[in-house]
Length: 314
Image (cartoon, rainbow, N blue to C red; front, top):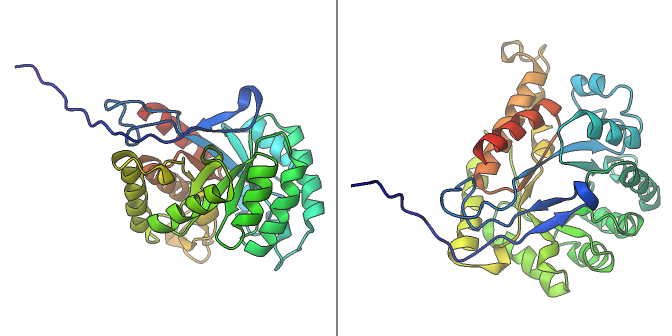
């Protein structure tokens, strides 16, 4: 008797979200199966891999990054052009570290000039990330959304403290995509999506950022939350959880001891650059097989490895 593989069919489907414009625009989501389960149904769009840059010189990054970007790191426009030309990234994530109130505290207007210059200098999509200070990010995104009008950017992220400002400006006034950020909890993720849609942001303009941690740092909570979100979206046809997921892996790996501790402090651990690549790859691979539709990384070698993994699995 011939073997007949059973197929798991789901009633729910992840919405498709487009970021960027023109030939280089990317689409996230569209699947109605668990990640890479092509034998069960539609796989949707392949996961996207982005690269992180900053609006200021990356003093806190590893020396290997400073050497790699020594000719461009002082100018975000040149940095963006360099990574577009020399890496395999599908999109660029420009993080506005310079706007941090506890740092240089650049004004939204200063940052808007940078964002406009960067988005006009590149062809691949731009993801704009804030400082992590919710009050400042609300004011920042309001101005940046206007500055990059027409370029269909993704803004990371709206949180409970500022979703009205971010959603109204980025998501509604200028029709950008909005990241809905929560803290590794299915109920909080659902709540942010509901709040944004009730505000008036279209569900097809929302991408979830459900939270992340580097592997070894409580990652099992990320894994279980992602599983529950995807199973609710597919199996229960929960439309409030049927948005694509983006995971800023580089934001997390970039500050954990195991990735960045100097050789002088931990000689038995080996080269910090190789450690940070290994941790980025391990974390990115984990979130992708868990259900993430896009990841943001720092190191070009991490991007290359993850792109190869996606190609082999897809």
